[in-house]
Length: 376
Image 1 (cartoon, rainbow, N blue to C red):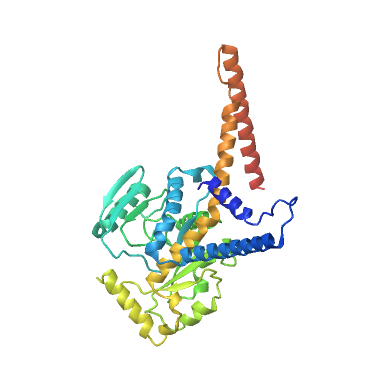
Image 2: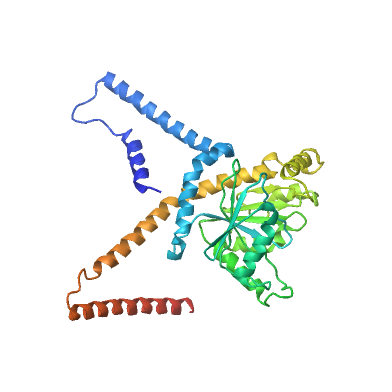
């Protein structure tokens, strides 16, 4: 987060190639020494790049130690509600077609909390569905409507990936009893608000049983990410429809730039460990699914890929976020400094009030003009 820290590192790296004082020419020995220093500095640069790649490719357990500070920074900014100031944060956004199945589950007994409407509600894995239903009723009413007010699910445990995701409502075109007639439009609006942000990674959850090109979530993501450079796809129900799946994920006719991961969902009362064993056996032994590259199958691969992608998007976006925060801060400080320091008389108070009123009128005028232009 500290922009100064990044600047100082840049300066140190630049200083490695800075020429010596030109008024005192180098002897051949000095020149050789300088050449050695230059080669050494270049090797150091290569080593730094290799070290950075090792961090990106490290196992999740060690990777979390490195990425956790970045995630903490983003989480603190999210709690400070800087998005309300127009500053977007890096986020993995889950867009799900109605035929897809959930893919996330936990291997251990975690600590689970729900946060909504200023309340923090502890719950457990056995009761999480009921707790979410109760929270949803409190936010969106007891019908089957939706709301864009967030419901935060916090899961804490050791030895699992550090991830922050936004799970959006599943897309449905036909309202069921209890839903408003415009439910599709409402859901589409919420989804587009999240996936349109350049800071968002779009996680499309697809079913292996359908034609990917007909999936509504794919169509929506293509509207905002035409070449798929920030889109990742998870294919569920691989065991239910293995025929042609290799061709689907290899051909990439729908532009999934960050690749596919095929998974097997838990069945019945399977534990997490049992499900992973069955998943590994499926992709290892099945006559069709075993032909899919092992870097594209399994929940562990999905977790690793999500952690890496999240880290890369944070590293990419954080400098610009810092710049925007500093710009907002500077503008607010300027506004504060423009106010009178001391009001010692009624006339000064009235003059200050008129100045503030004029600023409000000008801001309102700009908003109205902007709204008029948007409606043209």
